[in-house]
Amino acid sequence: MVAEIQNRIAESFAAQGLMATLGATLEHIEPGEVRIALAPHPGLSQQHGYVHAGAITSVLDSACGYAALTLAPEGHGVLTAEFKINFLRPADASRFVAIGRVSKAGKTLSVCQGEVIGEWGERTETVAIMQATMVTPAPRP
Amino acid sequence: MVAEIQNRIAESFAAQGLMATLGATLEHIEPGEVRIALAPHPGLSQQHGYVHAGAITSVLDSACGYAALTLAPEGHGVLTAEFKINFLRPADASRFVAIGRVSKAGKTLSVCQGEVIGEWGERTETVAIMQATMVTPAPRP
Amino acid sequence: MVAEIQNRIAESFAAQGLMATLGATLEHIEPGEVRIALAPHPGLSQQHGYVHAGAITSVLDSACGYAALTLAPEGHGVLTAEFKINFLRPADASRFVAIGRVSKAGKTLSVCQGEVIGEWGERTETVAIMQATMVTPAPRP
Amino acid sequence: MVAEIQNRIAESFAAQGLMATLGATLEHIEPGEVRIALAPHPGLSQQHGYVHAGAITSVLDSACGYAALTLAPEGHGVLTAEFKINFLRPADASRFVAIGRVSKAGKTLSVCQGEVIGEWGERTETVAIMQATMVTPAPRP
Image (cartoon, rainbow over all chains, first blue to last red; front, side, top):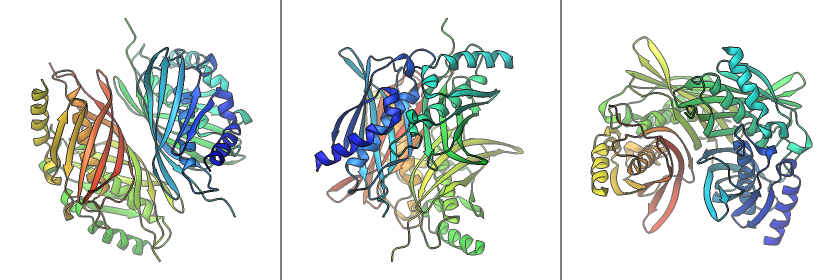
C-alpha cells in the first residue's frame, strides 16, 4: 500500500509541468511526509541572484500537497486551499530540500506544516516555513 | 519620479530569472500598484493540467513586492518577509493578471494585498487572493 | 429570508460568551457582509494600553464567520478553519468596527476578507486586515 | 539574565488587561519559549459552547510575542506584525496550554511558531497551530 501511494505520487509529480520547469525532484515519500529537492540555477532567481520566493514556495506547496495525499482516503485527490509561508533567511544555499508533513489529516481538509532546508556544504539551515490547508476531494463518480 | 521607479522596477523584473522562466511579463506600474501577466503553458501545470498554485503565487508575490517598492523610500530594496494566499477556483483560465496593491507603506515593513484575475475570453474571475508583508531595507552604505 | 438569516446570526452571536465578555455588539448584517463593533476598555488591553491583537482578531473572526453564514446553504453551520491577520497600526482608536466580507462562497468552504476600521473622532483608518477560510458544515441528520 | 527577562515578561503580562479578562495565566518562560494556560468558562465560548477561536488565538498570540521577547535585544519591546492560525479540532478540552516558540530571532523581526495543546484528562491533542511575525522595536530614546 505504501508502494501504491508512492507510485501514485511519483506519477502525479511527473505530471506537474512546473516541477520539471523548476528542475525539482521527488526525493522521499513516507506516510505523512514528502520531500522534494531543488538545485538553484539562474532561471530560478530573484533580482539579487538568490532563489525566488516563488520557486521556494512552489516546491514546498507540492511537498505539503503530496504529504496530505499519503494519508488521504483511497482514490481521493489533492488541491491546495491556502497556505502561508515565512522566509527566514536569503535563499542562497547550494541545494534545498522542501519537507511537507501532515499535522492533521481529515476526511476533506488536511493541515500540513512544511519547511525548506537550505544546504551550504555541511551546514544546513531552515530557509522558509509553511502552514497549509489542503483539500482532498473524493474521486468523481 | 514615476518614470524613475518604473525604470527601476523594469530593470529588477528583468533580473528575476524566475519571471522569464515562467513567461511572466510586467504589465503595469503605478504608485502603490503593479500588475504582472502570465499566459498558461504546459511547463506551468499541476497534475490536472491547470496552472500550478506555485506559479500563480510566484507572479503575485512579485507583483506585491514591486507594489511595495513603488512607495518605499528612495534607494531602498524589497524582500518578501511572508505571505498567505487562498486559491478560490481552478486556474484554468486562458490568461492571468496578478495585481499587487499596497495596503500600508511603512519605513521598513509594508503590507500588501493582491489578487490574480483569470480571463476566460470575456469573462474574468478572481483565482487567488494574497495578503503579504514586505521588508524594504535601506541601501547598504 | 434576509430577516431569517439576521435572526439566526443574532441568536448565534448572543450565544457567543466571548463577544459579551469583550463587550462586542452586532452592528450590521447583509448577504455577504457582517459588521461587529467594539469599544475599547482596560479589560481588552495589551501591555501598552492599546487594544490587544487578540481582541481585534476575535471580533474580526466572528464578523468573517457570520458573513460566510449569510451565504451558506440553509441550515448549515459555520466554523473557522484558519485565518491570517496583519496589524497595520496601533489599536488606540476610540471605537472599532470589524467588517467581514465573503470573497468566495462554496458548498463547504468559504473564503472571507475582513478589516477592522478604527475611529478617532472623525478620522477613520484600517487597523487590521484578515483573510480567512470558513467551513460551513451541513446540519447533522 | 533569565530572571530579569522572566520578571519583565511577568510584569508585561500582568499589564495585559485581556489576559486577566480571559482568565489566562503565565505558566512557563525560558529563552525562546513561553507557555500560557487557559481554563474554559462560559465567558470564552463560541455559539456551540466550545472555546471561541478568538480566545485560543489571543493566548497563543501572547505566548508567541513573549517568546520573541525572550530573545530580543535588551530593552526592546514586542508587537505583533501578523500571524496565521489553523484550528485542528473543536476546542472542547478541560484545559489549554498555548506554547510560543521562536523559529528565527532577528534584530527587528522575529518569526515564531506556536501551538495550543488541549487537555482532556490524561489525553492531550493539538487544537491549533500558529505561524507569527513579531516586531521587536528598539526602545525610544
